[in-house]
Image 1: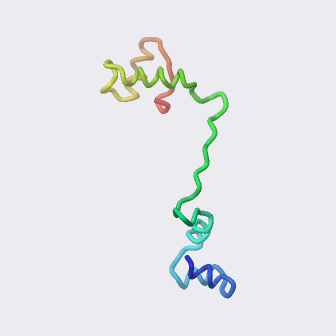
Image 2: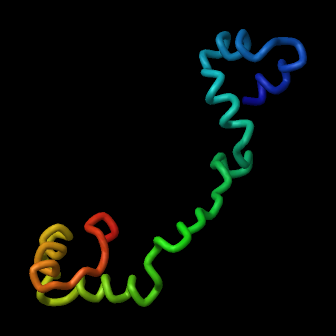
Length: 95
């Protein structure tokens, strides 16, 4: 990476990457990362407004999934059983 940065004023990006066997996408990705850790900066994803479970709803779903009745069941099985009982907590994918 340092070699490309040093040669940047003399070479264009494509020939420099081709000479080193590095794709241009990798070069641009590495330029945007934190050079001390080599990772991209992590940004927090906002929760979708009005669609995310509240903390209380999330606790209820986790309580049901961890209960003795459903501790060994797959989320689809729990979902079907709860619907049979007339109870809807959230979608299968949310579980």
